[in-house]
Length: 243
Image (cartoon, rainbow, N blue to C red; front, side, top):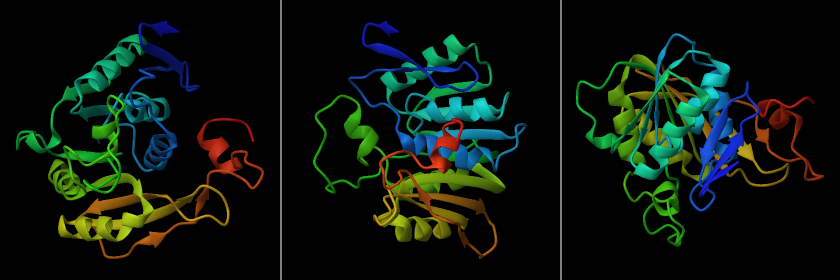
C-alpha cells in the first residue's frame, strides 16, 4: 500500500504493519535481531524504553512478542516519529508512546525503566562518507548522539538492576564495554553476528545490567546466511518463518 511516499509493510507478526518511507531510512536485520534478543529477556509487565527508535520498528516487534508491554519510544527525527505514530494508529496500539526529542535532553525525572533497547547510529563523525539521502545521515552517523552519550543516558534512565540491550558494530565492542562499565552498566552477554560462516563479524548484540556483577558470557555466534546465500534456520526462526 502507498500513501504518497509512505509504504505500509506487513511485519508478519500477528497482523501488525509498519509505515515506512522508501526514500528515507527503513529498518534492517539489525533491528529485527535486537528485538528478538531483548524480547526473550524482558517480561511483558515491565516498563520499557527504546532509544534512537526511528520509525518504531523495535517497539512494534516487542509488542508482537510481549502483548501489552508498556513501551516509550524516543526519536529525534520528526519525520521518523510521524511514521511511528501512523503505525501505532493503524495497528490500534495503546501500549506504545512516541516522544520526539533529543535523548540527552530528557528531564531528570524521566527515569526508573526496567529495560532499555537501543539501535543507535553506528558510524563516528569522520568515520565514513556522509549520506546524501534524507534521514540517512542522522540514522547512520553520530551527528546528534555519540556512543558515550547514548550509554551514559541509558544508565541514567534505567533503575537499579535495569537491563540494557544494544545492537552495534562488532569492531566497536571494546569501546562499548568500556563505556558501559564507566556508566555502571555491567556487560552480561554478547552475541557476535556474522554475514555467513568464514566471514568477519559485523554486528554485536549486547546485554547489560545496571550495577550487575562482573561476569560476561560470550554466547554462540549467529550467522545470517548459509554458504548457499539463503537465511540460516536461526534467522528464519527469528523472522517467524517455518524451518
